[in-house]
Image (cartoon, rainbow, N blue to C red; front, side):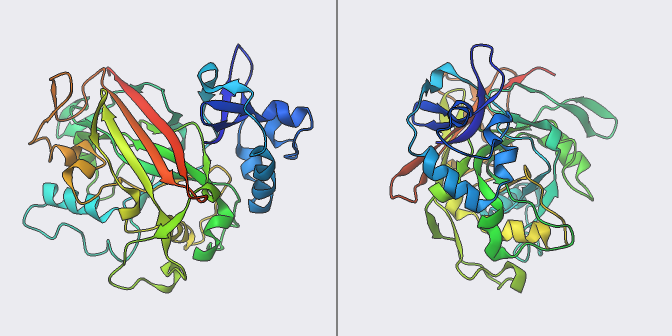
Length: 366
């Protein structure tokens, strides 16, 4: 389910709502007076609707939920659902951070000293966020001193993306209790990563060219209101006041990662240490403003077991333990022509199951 933008039969972009295998054409429904979203469904993107804020989201969604699909999902071509204003990626799974530490810093504490005190993150590149199905060209860059060429360790990161609707003023931190006033919904996200480029460039700052070439998102934005709250993992040591949640919660989102049609992992989002509300509070605590269309990602989602990891770096333990796919081929990192599909389901607020769809991409040669 979720809101998105699509085209069909040569038409321009139209706003739609996916439900099961059908799509409600919201652009047409608003034009015919079957709902009133203030004209925001006539713009060919979700941004105008996202900017209306939570009271309007609730009111419009109540009407949208009553409408029957008028198109088949198979007959529409999904487009990028919103214009990305800014993009931030976090590093919030303790299992992922611990695995990376053990791979890259053996014999040292796997999680760095500051990690349990704040949600670590970095600013990404909004212009290379693309919709599911967009091919991913293998990036080139420096792989070491005097070594330039295509990445030989191309990887994925299975994540959840949070889409900001209501903006905030510059200079004003967003309170942790106002998370749902600003964030409209979620998408599935693949933060493609060139590990050889990343490992050479990231010291002493952080991810840059190893991450900025492509980030894929699913085409249908699922409203937060559709998801059930569940308890988040306990935190130790206690966090600072601006990160302390009166009612600490997260979402029971289950991911699956397919590599050329072989399911290789099932990462559990509810295991993530820093919640999306804490991420938003930290993102704005210095006074950074939110803009409609901002996207921030959870960071790689990994569970405690090897078949719950959200990256191939972890799955193959730095390339030391190759994975055998259903066709008999062996992989450590991505080859040209490989396709990765991340799917997601979640516990629904109504007690049922919510389908978050999928995000897929195929690697093209450099």
